[in-house]
Amino acid sequence: MSHSVYAKRVRDRGLPLARRHRALRDVVGLYCPLGFHGTWAYLGTAGDLRNDEKALLRALEMLEASRTVWIRETEAFAGHRRGEKARHRRTPPRAQVRYVYGFRWPGPQGRDAMLGEVERLWNEFARAPFPGDVPREDKSALAELDTFLAGCVSTYLANGGSLDAHRRRVVTEGAPKLRGHLSRLGYRSNSPEAFGYVRTLLKMTELVANSLRQESLGIQESDGVPVPPADGTGERAPQLPHGQPL
Image (cartoon, rainbow, N blue to C red; front, top):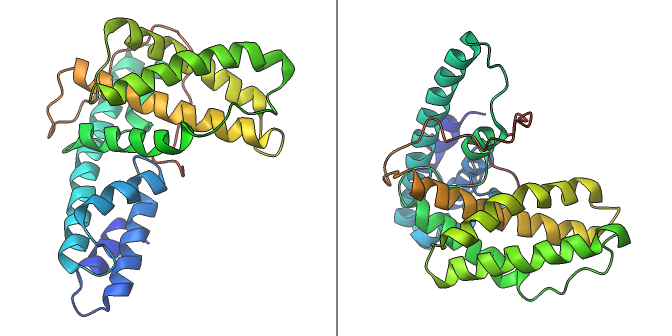
């Protein structure tokens, strides 16, 4: 079903609160900019979603405000791409696609939402040991990336969502390398500990990068950004789904 159908159920006072709560989960299933679990966790800051009607409606408003901005961004991005194609630039830079469709919270409370999700992931990640099933040929390089990127994530949290220029560069340059390692690890069944560990580190790194990019572009909390700058890598950009289940 569509977003509007589920949202209408959330607002329907004639339905039991438990059913309206399930409808909100269905809404999040369709639009989860921080991943399903991350988005649901952030909406939980609105209050007791299971037992408080006002909190349930407040959470829906938070989600819809973000979704409205994201739709505006994607429409602007599509318009930009039509102009680029007319100039025979048919492949968008990877950074543009990853920003528009990647892990972040467009619109109001974006900075707080991303900071909160990084903190949620970090609280579990920081207790995990370096995985023992990393392939031997990747272990040294991945351990180095882990040290530098985890350090940047920790500093980002300690600073309340900011990084100095050097650490920003580490995050920007380290994320593509980490994606390469995740790709080589393959499916979760090959190296389950390493896959989960690297996947979480990558998500935190991307959230930090997108949060800082939004800040550097001077985006206001209520604004959307149609076209982020290219990263200059010239890599072919994948068409990523928005909101991945993590």
